[in-house]
Length: 181
Image 1 (cartoon, rainbow, N blue to C red):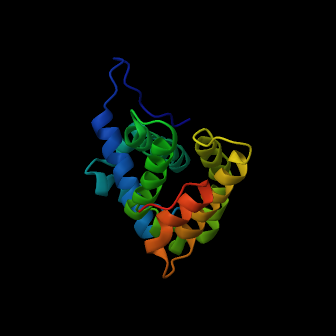
Image 2 (cartoon, rainbow, N blue to C red):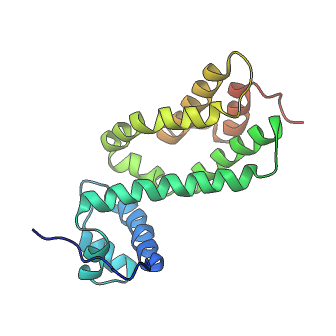
């Protein structure tokens, strides 16, 4: 059985692992998940194939780790954006973060390359995103507001249109926030 080599010192080489995950995002944006080549990821990360295999024994393992990496990026970003805020200020900061994150996210191109893969992944991501946003909403319609806002965000992610400048206003409306000045 071809098992990846593991560092037994207990010290994780996060810089190499991080470079591989960043490279994975870049290669996915160019090639998509189906055509993802571990050789191309290694080249993009500036590491050898054996080094890549030391960290990730297979394409599936790399993609699983990449999914966790993306969720961590999002979670850490939203935590920073909302730190020290409460109530509607915290909710508005979270919505602004969603817009900014989506505008800067390289995965937007992946929907153009492999829409079926993205849609399959969204079925897993939507409930998680909805639950996280619902924690910031109060009132009896919190679940509906969270679901609506996430559906608006997903719509903007999948379908490019002429109303991108209204994305934040649409999220605020869906979440029940008053229009900003």
